[in-house]
Image: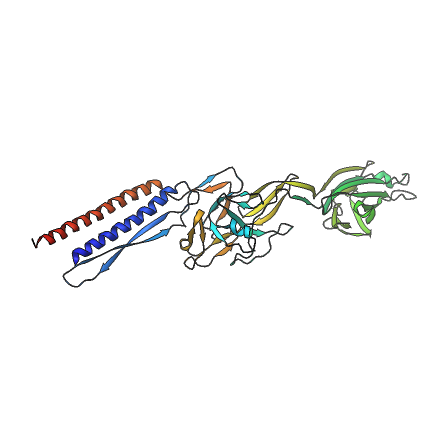
Length: 433
């Protein structure tokens, strides 16, 4: 009966608007929830053909959807590991429960923002128990090649706040002037000595002792020296010996004319570097190219170490951890160095709104979302990572309140239709009287 279909349609309308009210209330309740994505309810009409001359109300049904691709605005914070994604990518996280089980299986969830801090075990986690994941770096700070279509290479990011770090010295640059008078026939042939500190592979302080021995001729000036390098880590053994000859012509006077290896090393005339082997491995010592006024020179009558520079540092303590725009987790140490510990990729799927929504603003890939791919932050379509930032809720409270008024009116109207149908059915019943 047509009048009965009106009743059924209005009941369906009540249920549909109640569903929409639930979505609106959820949105308003989470208007201050970082990273929250709006839920929307769509209405779809139901059409029932009942034959010519009559019309049967089919009613309405609803579908619910979370607009995960809508992003909230970013707000700054004071925590270096407060992270937000500027783009369509998402951060990989896992649950604290799975890490606690420690069976090697950590399911990957996705989120667009999070306030991560180290817990008692050093894991970067949120207050809700989400642990950030990334690819671990090798000891030299490089990231190995990991598969991009699986989360197997990802690990929970763990920071040891008591860790130490140091960098071995691999290069020393010398700028030293040797006295030209020491190679005269009237010279006493006094050896010039220089000691340079360096740091070995364990961060210990060692010394490279350098002797410059002049060649004193029977007459005139030889302009020749023997350079001997000794390594304290090798018990003072000679690790390099070189014959040096300086130019005494006008314009080029005092510059290196030739460098001849005698033992324990090589010389590259283009780069001006000696290559020797100390106890910890190869080391380059820059003395300057041939004919250059930098590096070693022989002028005047004074031995003058002008500048000595080198790389490497002693062991230092970790002071802070930050995440850059490309997702590299860098640890800074009080000796002025920083080291890459992890790289956080950004996850992308073809249909972001097809992800399954879970608690704490996390999501999981589904057949509707399509297969995921792990991108380098700042590369591809995913955008980059912003530290010292959080993403606000995508809820527009003014818009939700407007929808709330419309929903209330629609609900009341459907209730009024039911009341009207009830009165009409009562009139039909009264016909018999």
